Amino acid sequence: MEERIQKLIAQAGIASRRAAEDMIIQGRVSVNGTTATLGQKADPETDTIRVDGKALPRPEKQRYIIVHKPRGYISSTVEDEQISVPTVLELVNSDVRLYPVGRLDVNSEGLVLLTNDGELTNRLTHPRYGHEKTYKVLLEGYVNDEKLNRWRSGLTLPDGFRTGPAKVILLEGSRDGTWVRVVLREGHKRQIREIADLLGHPAKRIIRTHIGSLALGDLPPGKFRELTYDEVKALRDEAGTGKQRRPPQQRSSAAKPEGPHPSRRPSTGGRPASRSGNRSTSRRPRRG
Image (cartoon, rainbow, N blue to C red):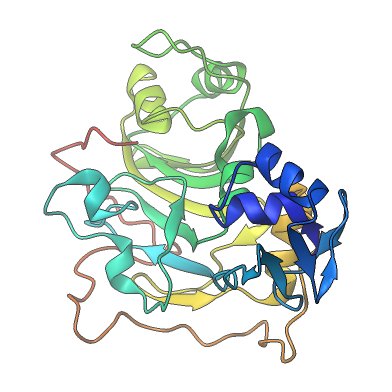
């Protein structure tokens, strides 16, 4: 994808964007052997960009992977957490370093997007962009309309944070438990669990099913797959991050799920999202 040359130089860590503009004005930058001009764009994947005669390194290949996180895994890097709980990164094979888009706590399940596309990650996670994330939630006991309406209108959490309006759809309710679908445009720490506690119906299961248009579908717990071109394009269009280059050979939309790396520990938890088991959790993590 074409970007302004000063931005590409800054992304390569050679100089700030302002300093890169000065380099272009001074004639120190070339594209495919021709002196660059201020405001010119180039595609780092196909064009040769040189600064003082030295070529810019080729950009790292961008990867987009969906994982069905089981219970018992955290959706962040071990280096970030410094704890012994296994991470979703142990479930995938990748030739580049990947980062999770948003988080699920250790007892939550479902869709985790892993990518090295920093711009897309920022757009999908920063609160000001308000991108939707959808969850299927099992609450203890029967939850009446009055309590669901309180959730829909917004509540003040124990730390003083006031949640915004949310879509809360009743799916199935009985004395044994109530399934609801929750669509959020914000991601405050442990938000769903704390709201459920405030309503007096603790969350027994939380399963993330969508990030924007990206759906978990029937991907089994502990498995992963690469996103298709169309899925990446849809996410980038929603996030407003520009056009996605179509690869020479597009993967089928029915891409076969892959399993964890054989040298790493296998999944030990999680259930398919289609089940409605009522297993409760005695210990709640402090990550959200």
